[in-house]
Image (tube, rainbow, N blue to C red; front, side):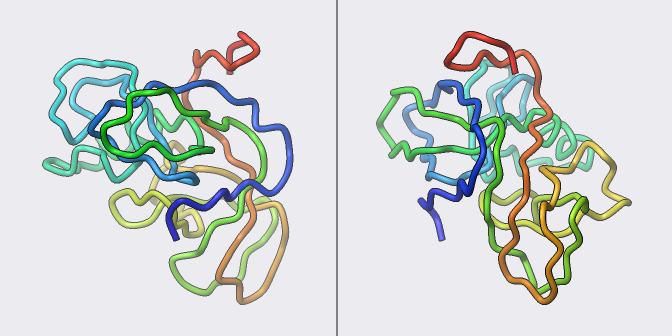
Length: 170
């Protein structure tokens, strides 16, 4: 299901995100910005501001605290792909409604929050578990539906200070 443009509607309020050459990004990936020491899987010990798909999160020590930090640095959805070896910036959506597959069939209610699944995945979501903490929500469901395998939700990036293409802060 990778490399799908999952945008449904709404202004995406995009910015250009820097991508490391060895990092593969697929359109539709949830991205975090490396604004905390040791978040990415490459073991970078200092922040570098690059964007990474959630699967590039440092799983060597996936503590709950570090998972919350990845979600806290959720900066949006990749609107285009970046293959390995390419260092050009990619467009990242910070707003709008997107449609993603659910981890399992579920009933959903408008206003319910959604989160990533398992440790962190790039393109699968689940209804928000209250025990996970409020910093782990990726967005809010926009339509009540029964027995869905895909759900439409409005993304809510947690990161602040990102500059959009129109030079305004997110």
